[in-house]
Image 1: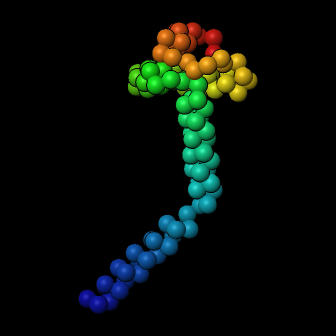
Image 2: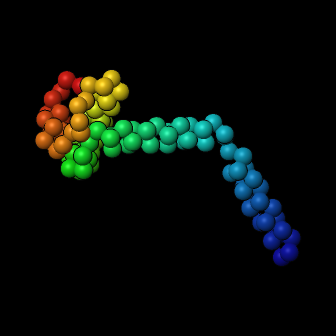
Length: 101
């Protein structure tokens, strides 16, 4: 029995080592995605008021691809300085009805 336990421990340790040495590219990709998501959220927090963020969250549940389009549109406008003030719920509702983004 001691031999079987020793073999099980060896296999477990080998699996742990292999998991630790997983492809470092994956970790870098995950980190890049995480930073991009944080940046998007930061920009959206600057350009949307609370009701507008709630509206986008509700829209994301029903139409995630449309939400992504509206978010991209708002981020692009913010980057080019085309926004004056924060978007409120009404402006977001108008934007998600437009198909020109």
